[in-house]
Image (tube, rainbow over all chains, first blue to last red; front, side, top):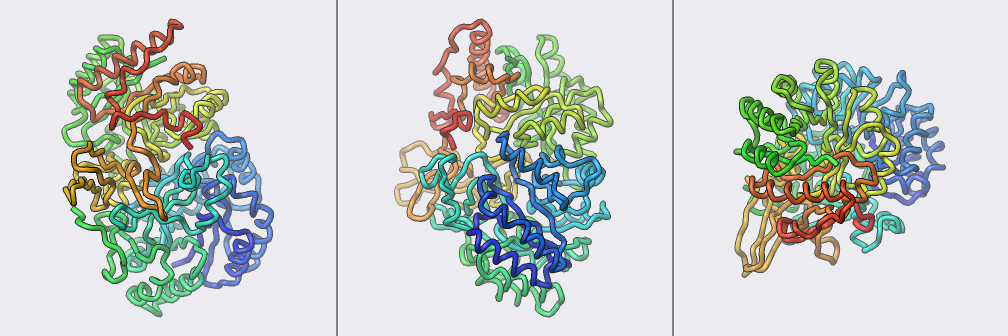
Length: 308
Length: 325
């Protein structure tokens, strides 16, 4: 099972951003890295000039490297230009909004990210005909759908393995709204919460996290218990979503888990201190809800009251 | 401008046609459409009758097949498309890339609209769907300003349809998993958001708590009207603040913006509410028909008549106004 590190979802300090990719380049357990701006086009200029160095380091470290396209492209000139510039770069693009297909050359080879709605083999076939060569499936899919899609294609299929789940995108910036600022005058306040800002219910139930235009899960997805089933389904790799602290420990634990040196229980016990939000979920695969957790209850700090 | 109106039942379809709808959108009673509520939607014979009723009165019927087919079960969606064509639908409203490609290939003469569930929010992706699959119209997401809609229309050759009244979706539709995260039911796969089957109310300490999937979305004083616990319109805690983090519990009412939407080049105005009663549909359609006729004749658009039909008696023009963000 390969490990892919997905794009940073939050807005990180540029120095920290560079240090992260420098360390990742020297992390042998990671075979593939997708980087670049996924959420907000206003963030890219803060680290755009650092991208070439990071890419060079990752390639020198033997990683496959792809550049993520923006998850929601509005009619803004800078967003459409970003898509065009990505297509013109001599590097694999990970499509996270079908807008990219309009910019990629007909013979371009690309990968498909988890924010594109690939719910079935028919959609996958259309993307494959267009040049897709690898896909990370949407986190919302059930294990049955993952199995059926993986069985229907020769292309490597990844699933979301770790990290706060990308649940929604909006034209509205919730960080700016929370700070009573207009979106256009956000003053990049999302940088205060590089792993997301917790949204709890009125009864203090842990619920969601906001990340600018994006809404994330409050709980940290962790597919450790599903590794045997995912392997059997033919899944090629797990996607791990970066976080500002404890992430390299999580990578190390996944490496031990996939190599069979520790079991899922031990993985969860050791990974819990590093989980954003301090609780796990893995329910989209075969639970009653996405937030459900298949492991032991002491691996979840907050339980919703009275689930019907 | 064309008025596109909802019908969750055959009776609502007739009511909408009689009240002046130019087009009706509706779906089959199964997982293939994004308002898959119990007791709603159309059997095949009901669809045939509804299309005949509409066509006899000069109205069109657009069939929404806008959920994402389940892997291994795409035949249900393929059959919905071929049945819609056989029954005489004027167009199908689609979201899934695979289903759009299938329809373009196997049913080239069937007019294809891009559902709001496809979340096509810029000219490049709209033109891609037009050139690759012959899509003739796109239903725009409810996260764009009027200026942005105008800029999209300048760069595309396909028609645009926008929501003007009813529920307000603040996330990019078709790309939101919030509901399935806590209820296991999703707009994309099950055609439902914040489903009633997962709602519970409880009187606690003189307050009414409203929960969705066990998560407390609202607490209101016992005698105050309690809004339906729609997930993204809930009241939450963030840091030291408590409030409506995503959106207030308000409905969309863009009737004041009809002239601006017309200037922005919008072809069709869509009214949300296939789950609404026949009486509601008739009233809203009648009011909007008067409004679009006034607009066409250069008269002032009558305003304010719809306020009491909005959720919690509160309305917003949503993203169409730039300050919404």
